[in-house]
Each structure stands twice: as C-alpha cells, then as structure tokens.
Length: 127
Image (cartoon, rainbow, N blue to C red; front, side, top):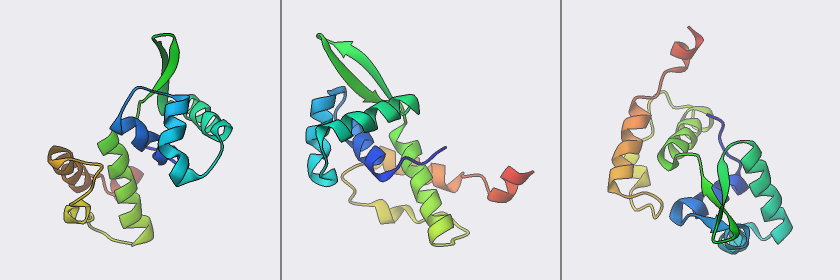
C-alpha cells in the first residue's frame, strides 16, 4: 500500500471523522493544519481521486467526497513504515503507543495491533 502524503492524510482524517464532505467542508476541516488556499485543497482532493484514495458523488445536488482507503489499514501502513524504515525495528511497534488516540477507538486499536503483528516480513515479500 502506498502511504499517503501528509496533506493527503489530513484530508483522509477529516473524511474518516465525518463523511461525506463537500470540498468546502474538507477545506474547513484541514485549513488550520495545512494553512493553504481552497484551490490547494481542491487540487489535492482531485489528485487523491486519481490515486483512488477518495470517491466523489453527488448528494442533494452537491459534489461530496468519501475516503476509499480504510483507516486502520492506512494507519497500520504508516506505523509499519515508521517502525521499520525510521526506527529500524525488527518487531512491530507496541500498540500501547497509540493509546489515547482521538483517531481510533478500542476495536480499531485491537484491529491495528493485529494487523501490525501479522504484517509480512520484508524477506517473505522477496520470495
């Protein structure tokens, strides 16, 4: 799985919290964190559609967007990448480091822990 960029993750987090959202609503949700223009938000969302990260449809005459990437799978990919590439760990990150997260609930935390412990070894991928 390709890991979304920081702005893409910001958009995804807004959509995971509440979807569907219009482009204007997405912009309002990410505006403080990204500090950029509405046109930059729209362009990012368009690129995310091309990458099949988000879907667009019309609701009550307004174009709205929703995440196509699964939240827990995406977070697991980030955590795995951080643990292996950045921290050079051979074992999964301890899931307790995510305790207190406002982004995941208890069941998603358990799912995240399972995904990280089941992650295929890089050596297995080379075979």
